[in-house]
Length: 327
Image (cartoon, rainbow, N blue to C red; front, side, top):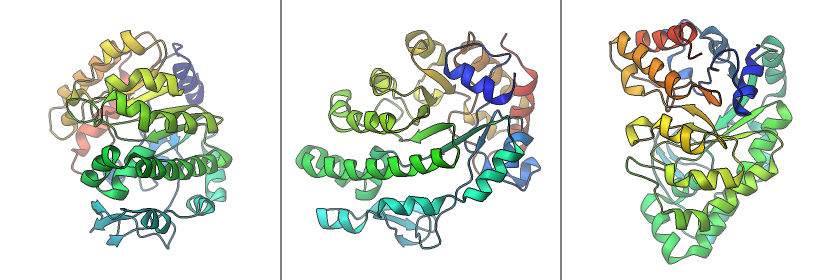
């Protein structure tokens, strides 16, 4: 099977010739993995997907210093808080929807598609309404306002949803075949808000996003979001990415409970990638392949390839993924 065929077979709960490899974010270790090109790295390490290239507009202050156009506060590239506290702040820190066009270089994306015609072109970024909401306001203010001023919280979430839809529609127009909605909603013990609050504040917006897009949408979240998975199914997500084992997301159990309705992506424990025990890396791959056997699963880390990982361990992950088979 070709890479794209494997991905879509898994998304449709089928059993391709091998488990698809679907690492979404790799670029933190480009040179260490023997590549310079942030797109070519995907084919270089044997992935079945290619992440669509995008770039921040030159006028954006995101990931720099100070307040960006979304009201997020940055210090030396790290998020430190949010400033949105009123409807005036929301208006001042919500760029026009047409600005989404500036994140995509149509000619560059066309060249990527021509270079890798058999791979599945994906787009994923952390702009889901929940994450965008608490980053715009800062954690304490956002979660307090869900209780104290739900009308404002809903206005903020609605505005961020419209931006999210605009960005993902631009990605689809540029050629994205599968979308990954980054919307982190869990911690080590469970969701950040109760399922009851999730249904009121987030579920309608997730459903609006999925309904507005003509291609499959996978929801990414760190942490333990198992209690929210029934609403992920109801919202129309085709799959879930992350499946954080450090937060108790047991792949075998989740596959039994939800695998008929959701394709599962991830679950490789990234802790093994920070050390030097290559057998532990291989064991982790074997564990995930066994737990995900039977179709409807794509192997990936529970998060991403990030700075600080041992390049030898990451290289072994990708090498052994190609060698190991679950069926």
